[in-house]
Image 1 (cartoon, helix red, strand yellow):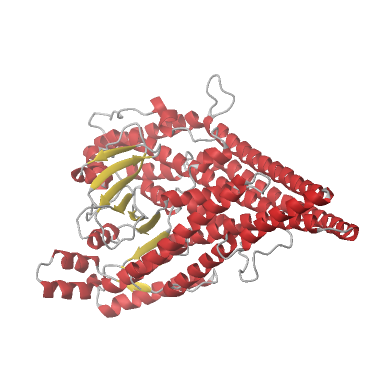
Image 2: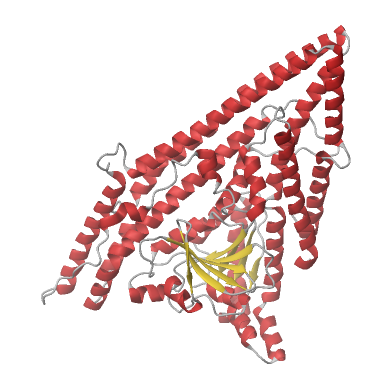
Length: 638
């Protein structure tokens, strides 16, 4: 299936859902008595305005991720080296013209030139300079815009630092970014899969099921040996997927080197031979299929769910008013009153069930918020990853040149690592809490629906709270719903700048000890003392209560996040309850109207009901879009 063939249908589906959600939202806006859409509905509707999909390329260090991406792009853009090369995330997007920029955690950006890509994104360059060249800001990723004809619009390829590097910050960056992945390309090489890779694959599967696996560097082994390793790795992969009740995809062999040779070859016959030997054509087909599945389905399921929920709420309201105004005799009115009493009873029962679910979700939110301090505190322990990493680097120093270089690098490096860890922990907490809040609000919406079907031709969409959480989390992670943090949870929980908190704890450089006697050992001991001092000072910056404040920065952030989340859920619960009570009162009032008023109201609601169910109405439109989605899925596989 070629993207050029499928693209019109996918665009039609997304445009149709966006238009339908706008149409459904307008129904409630034009009729204030109708049930109003949930914040999740509005967030999904708005997400279509700035839709994007990140295909994240990840794997252990030196598997050839950047080399493969350079070969796919057809240009030497990403830094590669025999040592660890990539130190930052590179986000490569389709564009008519080339442009490059640093994107910071505060949302600002800074244009750079192509020649500066290595300066900011290469670990080799960072080692030479003693840092990534960015002062006073935390670099989130490097944006690379280049012409890429094969990529669909709004899809980006993301190169991440390798796992298992001596630079622990690389692993933290990759772990943080994987939560934003719409799909993942995971690289092995011709060595057996290790435990760290298994653990990371499980993390990926918690985020997305759109994942493919490639074994690179097949040119470095003979076919028999590499096939034995591939099969052992495939067996390990099968176990991971079987534990989740799923079938593992096939690991596809590829040679990035031969693909690079093919890109550089001018002789067409040799080019074709190199391309065939690289085995890339099959990888490309599978990559494009995964991208197509992602673009076609990532937003559609949750959009259909939220759209159907709102239509159900509106139809239930109109139907009950219709029944009230249709009742003509005393017997009709008495029967309607009985139906209302039964409706009240069912709604009360569902409301109690929903309240229990909301309490469960609120407890989950409390667990997330209460874990923030504990998680962040761990990084300052002597057994923590930052301390262990730098202690090992100190122990491995072999000469005074290395001592001097580390004295120059460590203060800023450690501070950046601490800041990066805070960004990871606080950002993940906000995403998780916002997802839970939206699930709770969607649950409150569904709790008011009783015995109502859109149409016998449409199968009702349903998710467990866990499935809905994953759907919402994936959109939040890609940045689609990030803007709703302030709208849904309030502005008091916006994360503080970690570099601003660290402030004066960063020294320009540490001095080293001169002298002849046991100079290397003395400097190692001195560096460890400086490491202990800086880690202690940094911890105090985050966990001690500043003068004039009532809480430490970390505690205040966690407390505000918890309070705002609970308040948001409680406010929406009260809003939905008041809305439900008003609707019940509307039903009662409609039944009490005199004959003439009933007739007029009946004519209005009868028309509204017919419009809702008409061949050009929103219910039929939703059914058509569901069928289109199913048709697309049949073409590309589910």
